[in-house]
Picture 1 (cartoon, one colour):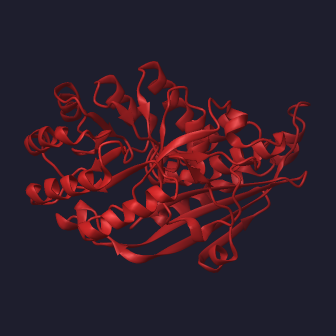
Picture 2: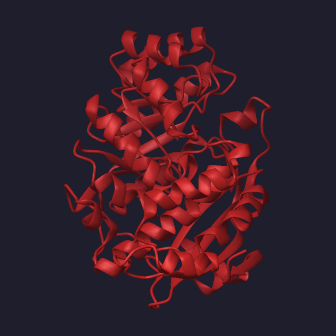
Picture 3: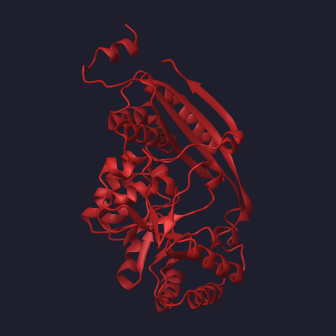
Length: 388
């Protein structure tokens, strides 16, 4: 008896079977090189593209789900290679059993760990399974999960990078607010902290007192610099100070969180529930910023959301707003979603922003489909439709 035949006889409750998985490695070029503090401190080169791993899962009943993960700078080919190895293990499975399938895929590649590139590869498959499940129900993903709201506060990051002059950042902020986005985040963490403070002051004066305003140091301060500069930043009435320290310095973040009135936000660079739990356990974060594609998908994100809610933490998922607007809408405590316009060329649909909030659409699942341009940017592709 084949693996597929065994699966078919294992349960009378099976609703459908996975027939095929298509994986695509798509490189999104950015219009201009992007620089945050990591470039100015010499740790990275300007970013010119983003590598995406897309998974399209089709069932015998003709349903389709799409999911994605991504890598900025290195790592995209590794994600694609790992997904290519484990995807055959989905063929013949019931796509509704998402938690079990996540565990199966993790154990298929257990020798390379339960975080990092391996689980980021699984994330694309996991997101596609959730998209498929919501489409089967005829519901937006947020409604399948159980939404607390039909719109989410949103703030923009893509207009506040350090490669642009402060005048350009202010112009970007004006256009962003006019488009219906509610808050503005800019990058800090320059080698010259005085220049950081000058830029923050200029933007706050430009925005006025009523506009939500955040800053992001991208892990470029040591503990003493973070404490000194963050105390100076308190006067600007910020919603949060993001990644003031190395992502794994839970103790240092905890010291800041205890010492400052301004909230500390971090978590986007972590790639597992266990890593986030250490931040939560030590009281190192006021606003958790998990990234579903980085932590292994929606299945793992939901575990983190439960832990965060238990501690009454704020939530502001990182990047990938097409996924995170649904997850934020299902979080009990009023969250934030990060608005990035970089991904617009990949999808036919647009998320609506109005009155400072990002609106859920009524489209089933994630509510997105790939553009022809996205498919033209495909650099590798594999179609899996039979068990190993």
